[in-house]
Image 1 (spheres, rainbow, N blue to C red):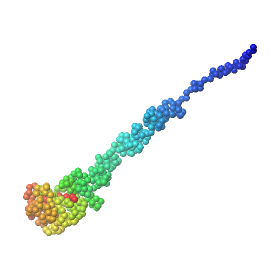
Image 2 (image 1 turned 90 degrees about the vertical axis):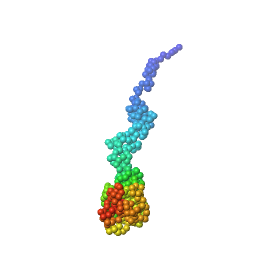
Image 3 (image 1 turned 120 degrees about the vertical axis):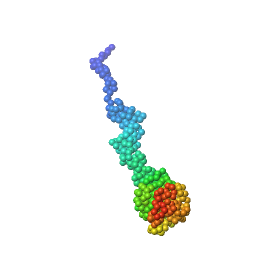
Length: 410
């Protein structure tokens, strides 16, 4: 029986094969693990999403995974997802100048918040990059102001500026959202029923040729809205162009110096050039113990003229007979004046019960030193009635001229 013994080359070949097999191994078990980078396309290391977040890589864009706001470019990590900036995420992001405000995309910032422009702030004032509280000198319409630095809690606004109520205006009148001059005290009272007695500036004919002027308003008597147009004791000249000055009339309403407005101004205050069409017309209040009010109405004249009260029949010149008639409000009079109720009576000739204190006439009398005024009857002397102690009387006559104030309202 024959057998073959392996040759040397067969033995060597086998040994080589065994050696090759014993030197081989798994590459995954022998290769080193790569170091994570922010550009390897793999979520690894401290990254919260692929190649971003975790503090070692750039911040993640919206919709990428996060664990903290610092992981996100928007600064907002909501439900572990980076979210776009919003005005309610409690983070200063996007165009915001401070947390959730400013920048034009969110609401304006309150005071003390960071800003870059006035438009970032509710006050409209950005000073040293901080929103600053509104003031009356910041040249911005803010706070309670109705116009720039005026109205509301600031000083009143001047003519033509914006307003909401009369108190916002130096003119005391707000019409259609702007400060305007009233045409009369009645006009002022209609716009502001709580207006008090005092001095006001009015413009009787609005845009007409009459310049604005200060007047004294009675806002309480007999319904209020009365404009003082004349005052004084003896010496009324009855000139159409007025007498004295408007300042004298306004500032010294109870002194005896005569002052009254141009008749054209009086007609403009009433708002009706047709004297016959006036309603309440003139109210003549006699002071100095009389304390009575005459409401004078026209009898024939169509144009209001102070000269209507003069009379050329008594040696002092002047116009023809008066064309005024009137009635008296006796509620405040200590004299019980009840006789002036005829709308047809001419006041210069009318008398109640004789030529006494209940009479009122206005022409110039030569026997009265031609001193014009709102005279009483001849038998009314300063001592005839208690309290009457401020009447002018000529030495040759007993007519008494008390201090008078003339008001107008229509």
